[in-house]
Image 1 (cartoon, rainbow, N blue to C red):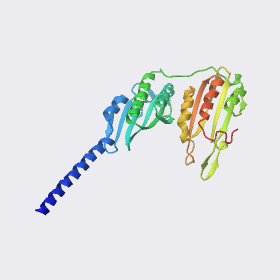
Image 2 (image 1 turned 180 degrees about the horizontal axis):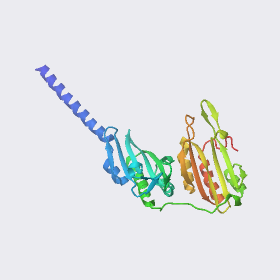
Image 3 (image 1 turned 45 degrees about the horizontal axis):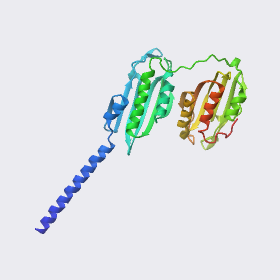
Amino acid sequence: MKSQIIVKRTTIVGLQVMICLCGATGMFSQTIRLNTDKIERLTGAKGVWNEKEGVFKVSVPRPDLSVTAAGVKLTPALGLTSWAAFEKVGNQTMVMGDTVLLEDQVNPVMSVALDNGLEITALHNHFFWDSPKVMFMHIAGLGDEEKLGYAVGKVLAKIKETSGNRGIVPRADIDPARTSLASKRIEDILGFKGDMVQGVYKITIGRTARMHGHEVGNTMGVNTWAAFAGSDDQAVVDGDFVTYEDELQPVLKALRAANINIVAIHNHMQGETPRTVFLHYWGLGSTTELARGLKGALDHQRAKKEMAR
């Protein structure tokens, strides 16, 4: 009788343990499961749940675009679809995505993404000979699911708002042959000297990285540069920033805050350390405004004055 009581108690304890484990498992699955209804509501886009990968992906085709590439009519299924994929990473959520943008939409949409806590990880083309030109901006984020869903929703809303040629197209009548800007003003703000060649005043700031066990620097292409033309009142600046990975987002934010347009974000090298990312930019305004905008971006870079020329 005593042994029977022990068995029964053991069975009851075992059942209690199983119930607790099942309950914990249920709680765990609820913890790691994304709230797909909320994501759809926040993003304003319909999604598909991938059970195997634990990823929820929302997609927004762009049938509003009339694009041809080498004479071929492009449709959403041929690559004109914006998307964002959400996945749980521990107690946080990760999002990665790609947005389909015409040139006039890129910077307004980029500013919205940055202002709402998303990162911009690439900006480039996917096609040749496309008309109108289509750019693809890749986004990423890690954090609270609701905040990320809200941020993606703001990005998608801005795409809709700026579609139909309602974005920003900067224009200016500038001919380098008639350049009259005061280079000293630019030097004083940036803290670097440059050279005037055929009406273009260019400053180059070298940096360093390592490839194949050797240091590479300014002359090998590891540099930030800025080229100015025009007058002090109306000038153009274009150029390239080489950033280490942890500098990219602050530099992008500083340039956009100065109303300087980003036109490409990509790599120039492979296997380098530290890993570098290059961004190309274009800005119009007074030389003072443009130089101050660049200075704000340079302030986010480490070792700004190494190998300056």
